[in-house]
Length: 458
Image 1 (cartoon, one colour):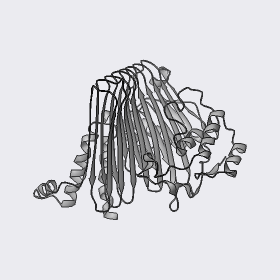
Image 2 (tube, helix red, strand yellow; image 1 turned 135 degrees about the horizontal axis):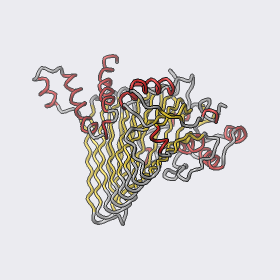
Image 3 (cartoon, one colour; image 1 turned 45 degrees about the vertical axis):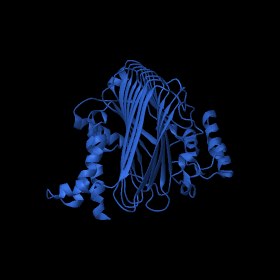
Image 4 (tube, helix red, strand yellow; image 1 turned 30 degrees about the vertical axis):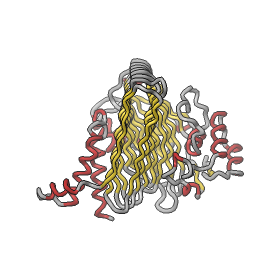
C-alpha cells in the first residue's frame, strides 16, 4: 500500500483519505491527528532558529512501498557463529547491509537492516537468543504493546516526530537484567533511489535492564532522487539504561546529498548507569541531530561525543542536552566539527542542573574549524543551574586552521593541502580515540580523508 501526504499544515482531503484507507491503531491515529494539526518548524522557533526546513513542505511525499505490509516483519533468526568471512558473507547476502561497516565491526551480536524503512531479515546471535533478549520490528498497522513507546520523546514534539509516531516502524530491543553482550548490535538503515522523494520514518526503542551491557551501532546510508526534492530520513531513538548497566551507542550518518536527515534521540540513565554516545555526521544535504541525555539516577555518568564535517552546501545542526536530574552525576561532552566550501554548521548545547542535583560535574566543549571563506559555523553553549554545589563549565571555539601549524609541516617538506588535511585529521582524532572499543574508528578516518579527496573533483 502506498500512502501519499503533504508535509505542509493544510492536509484536508489527504488526512481524510489516510483515515479511511489505513487501519490506524488508537495511539498511532492520535499521532496522525497531531501531524495534521502541526505546522512545519519555523526559524522563529528557538530550537529551529538556524535551520530552515520549509523547503521540505513543497513536495508531495509518500511512504515507501511495503512499510505497512506486516508480511515483511519476520521473527528473529539465529546468526550462526563461524569464521569472520563466512559471517560477513551471510550478513551481506541476506540483509543487504554495508559490507564495509560490518567488516569494521568484526563479530556482531545481531543485525537488522532496513531498506527504505522496510525491515529485512533479523539475524540475532545465539547468545542473545539464549538470554531471552527481545528484538522485533513492529509494523505501523499495529499498536506497540510495550510501555516505552514514546515515553521519553513526546510524539507531539514537532511535525516530524508525530509522523514517526504515526507511520514509523517500531524497532524494540529489550535486554534482560544481568545480560552482558560485548559484540555490537547493528541497525543498518539504507535509503535508495526510489524515483521520487520519500519519507522514511523509524522509531528505535532500547531497554537495557539492570547490570547489563551492550554496544549499539546505527548506520545511515543511501541516496534519494537524482534531481528535484530530496528524500527524508526521520529516526527517533529512545533508550532506557537500567541501574548499574553500561551502553556504548554510536550513530554514523553517511547519506548522499539527495537525502535530508532529521533525528531525535533521548537516553535516560538509572542509578550507577554509564553511557558513551557518539554521533558522526558526514553526509546529507541537511542533517539535524537532537541528542539528549538525562542523568535520572544517582551516580550515573554520560560521555557524549560528536564529529561532523560539511562541504559543498551541506547544513549540519546539533542540539544537545545534558540533563542532570539526580545528585552526584557526571556528564562530559566533546563535539568537534569542520566546514568548507559553502557548508554551514550550528551547535547549541545546554547543561541543565535540577534543584536537587547537588555535587554534579558537567562539562561541555565544542570546537569548529572553518576551512573556506564561504563556510560558517555557530556555537552556542548554555548552562542552566538550579543547584548550588556543582562543577560546571563550557567552552567553544570557531576559527581557521592554525597557520603556524601549517608552516611547521611545510618546513618539513609537506604540501600545504596535505598539511591542512593532516591537521584536520589530528583535530578529529581526540574524539575518535574516545569511541569505545574503537567502533568504526578506521571507517571514520577514511571518510574524513575522502572529504579532502573530493576537493579534486569539485
